[in-house]
Image (cartoon, rainbow, N blue to C red):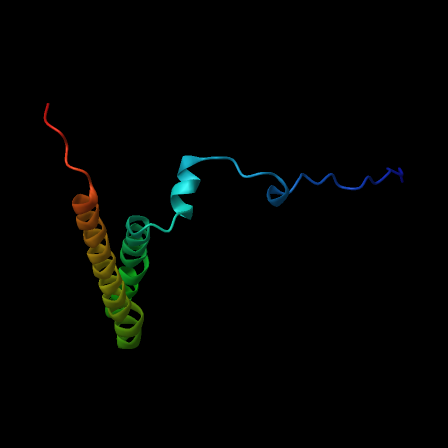
Length: 104
């Protein structure tokens, strides 16, 4: 047998030890603005909860279809509606506090 020396594995620096890059795509997902939260909620609603409702109905599992699909979609919809109302109120407040433009 040939004896080969075993070297300790070389570990790359962990991402946590490196500073985060200023990537606009990552920064967009880290914000908590109502528009971003509404987009994420709509994404989860369409991707996960709609599919659970469909699969539960297709496989004739009413519990999955209702509690994990339909009711979750209704919760998501009410959250999106409340966020839309909040965004409309913020836009209306912004319009009323904005100074009028001067005509020269």
